Image 1 (cartoon, one colour):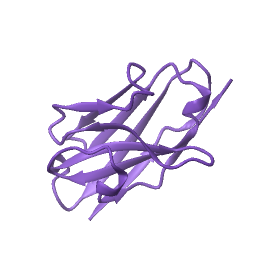
Image 2 (tube, rainbow, N blue to C red):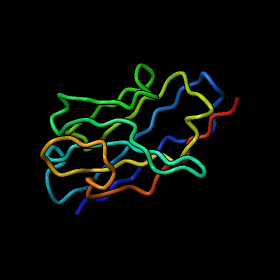
Image 3 (cartoon, rainbow, N blue to C red):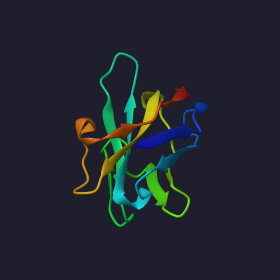
Image 4 (cartoon, one colour):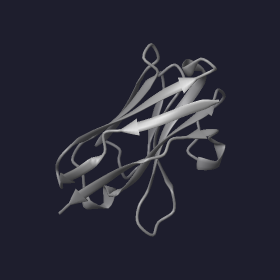
Length: 125
């Protein structure tokens, strides 16, 4: 069982930055999990944002955030972070942290085993 708690969301103007954090408590070693960020905007389906492999050696981003967002993790502190720069109004969404046990990383939400409750990001124009 893994509990995930996101923090760091809020209201920001277009062009601004936010840093989301996800703290994990796990009965299994946190470093066994690939970690992803997803988001769900108003009236939209949940979509992939970024993923980082269990060791942190590989990252992958959605085209819509590539070059603006950066995912990182600290396995000693059981945390994963999403640095979001040059934010746009279309980034407005509830952002979720998710954990997938081992194996290949995935951009598909249904491959993830555990989810946080989400944190709201609102970007004003």
